[in-house]
Length: 74
Image 1 (tube, one colour):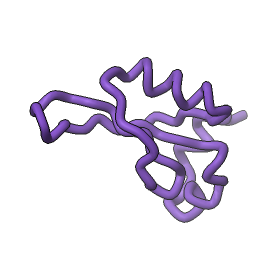
Image 2 (cartoon, helix red, strand yellow):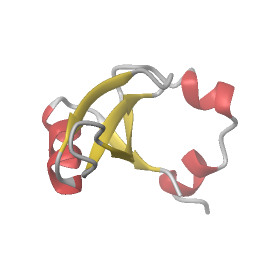
Image 3 (cartoon, helix red, strand yellow):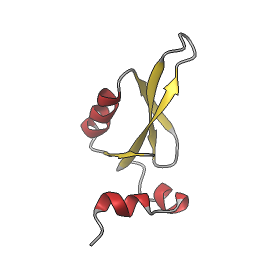
């Protein structure tokens, strides 16, 4: 039996985007232009950037606080 995380990893881009913008979010590391430091951008399933935070744990906490499921991209 395949677990839910494995099922999410096997989705196509179109399938992933259609999951529902209010339910799934992912985090990407980014370089913050102002100071060259690293931040973490939270994106909706369709790729829309929702927020940028300084720490990965805070990004995941923000997703959970908004009743969304965090999904990691590798």
